[in-house]
Image 1 (cartoon, helix red, strand yellow):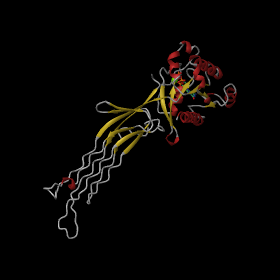
Image 2 (cartoon, rainbow, N blue to C red):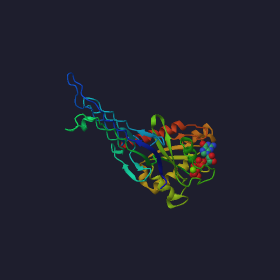
Image 3 (tube, protein in one colour):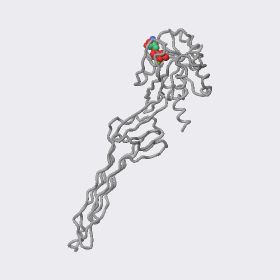
Image 4 (tube, rainbow, N blue to C red):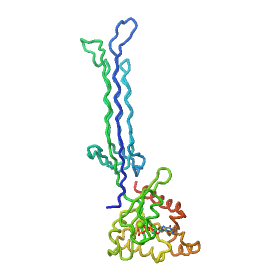
Length: 334
Ligand SMILES: Nc1nc2c(ncn2[C@@H]2O[C@H](COP(=O)(O)OP(=O)(O)OP(=O)(O)O)[C@@H](O)[C@H]2O)c(=O)[nH]1
Ligand SMILES: [Mg+2]
């Protein structure tokens, strides 16, 4: 179904190189030729994905970015093993599906908080000359180099369900709203049923917080019985967690009537939806004056918001209202 927003990035991951083993001999006073004491290298670091339930998108990853774990250090004299390279830990949101970009093979579906996936192993460390000492060769001059780490291109894919859906009669201005608050570019036109399939956009707020907003096809009376885009539309509504009713100024139907009609259709389709959070918004407010706005507001539920996607009026308040509803929901779901 179309209410999924696919967040997709390809990245490269490189395990760290293993540290080299070294050639070294003991040097003690009065001992002309000490035995070998060259230590092994440290292993290269791994690149590991780990699920962080606080994340909801892959927006922190730049497409094509390269992530390298640290190299292991070389061994030291006195049989000191080199320090191993630090792992590179990449946090991903729950629901991230990981595939090898070259083979297309699915490596894992990361769903649980804290779940880990090793995507590139660190290289094996080299051995120091101590390891090559035998009864015959007491002073080996041989040490091996660390191996390079694993490398691969992976694809991270997250399919998101919208947090909130824009619901309203045709021409209420739903697509215009989505296009001004996100990078989504739904079709906008002054005729009904411009939107045939839901469009989704990611709304980015301050401090890395974001949510997914769905622009839904217009809804008319009888939709729950299959009129207009009817059921096709309503199937999408039930996948949203917050219902945003958009009523438009300047339409044939009065705003209060739009709200009543649309809400009734939604609830007739699925009474459970009564339990979802609701936000009521009067849009296209630039078409009417202050006085008319106030009198329309009196006919809408308390706390309704007035906006214009064209002039920007009320848009900040609108986004904050949705943002705090989304936050509340996510907190209770944790
Ligand atoms: N003046 C004004 N016009 C608007 C505003 N928002 C949308 N419009 C116009 O209203 C018409 C319908 O806008 P859309 O965003 O396509 O409406 P919609 O609710 O997505 O319509 P459907 O997809 O048919 O359900 C277009 O001609 C828009 O340019 C607004 O804030 N002010
Ligand atoms: Mg539309």
